[in-house]
Amino acid sequence: MENLPLVMITGTRKGIGKYLAHYYVEKGFQVIGCSRSSVDYELANYQHFCLDVINEFAVKKMFIDVRRTHGRLDVLINNAGIASMNHVLSTPMNTVRKIFDTNVAGTFLFCREAAKLMQIKQYGRIVNFSTVATPLKLEGEAVYAASKAAIITLTEILARELAPLGITVNAVGPTPVETDLIRSVPQEKIDNLLSRQAISRLGKFEDIANVIDFFIQEKSEFVTGQNIYLGGVS
Amino acid sequence: MEKVVLMHEKIVDIIVGESKEVNKKLKNKISVELREAAPLFGENGILDSIALVTLLVAVEQSVEDEFDFPVILADEKAMSQKNSPYQSIGALAQYVGSLLKE
Image (cartoon, rainbow over all chains, first blue to last red; front, top):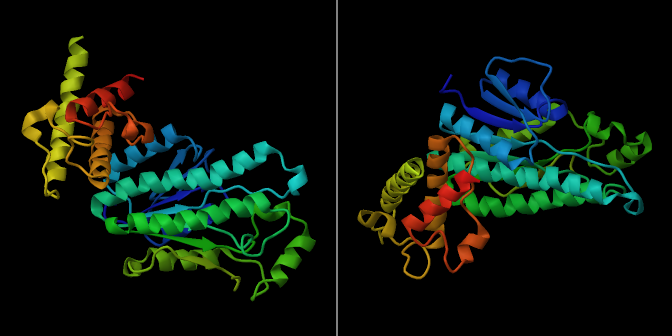
């Protein structure tokens, strides 16, 4: 078990994170997942931690556990994120703080702690999540898109800071995928968005996993600080 | 009291041990034989900020493993303090001890 590649995925209770947990277990990875509540599935080679990604104490406790058990971490996939559709005039500050906390501070905290663990072996692959909402300047998603714009900058700078430690940091920017995150978005908005993509369809989980697979390969050691948008968005 | 002294000694041992590891990559070595009096960072220190961060991460992980309690040693305020907890092994040990007591 100890020789299996070790991947940590945040936000594995549902949606893309749940898919990725199953996908990487099937691919022969040891998977560590986390979410605020427990998951409704059990998998061999999957360990779950219940925590909020912005709870520094709980996150550090999890990393201590991983370090003691495995002594390393090969891959971190920072999937956990929240969105909100709101016109600027009706966006409460509480929503702004929550989105930036989870999407930006949460991603930062996991990158920092993962890098501390990855530097032991001078090897690591970090994949963050951006979104096509940023380049498409989607109205109603100002806060969400801005938080993900921050992720791109974070990815680019961490790539430089962590390169000497053998750690690459990249990002994948999904189009809308059929998940809870977009269920509250009116169909008309979705159709309008899809029409602005080069390839006008909803994304699939497999599309995202494909990009992550590329970033986390050992031979992708010369690929860092990059962001790949799906669906031909640029 | 005895327990506190023992804990302090344990922390100093950890920092000395990790300093020896960091020394393997340094031109100007930390004077680990001075134990608590060994300068680290600041006015008389020999570590640059990257070497300091490397040492802090290593000490942080060893302390967490030893005491089973999360600590964060990198602190912007601490970095610029006149009586910086990073100035010597002894000062760093005091700082770690204070975080564990919190």
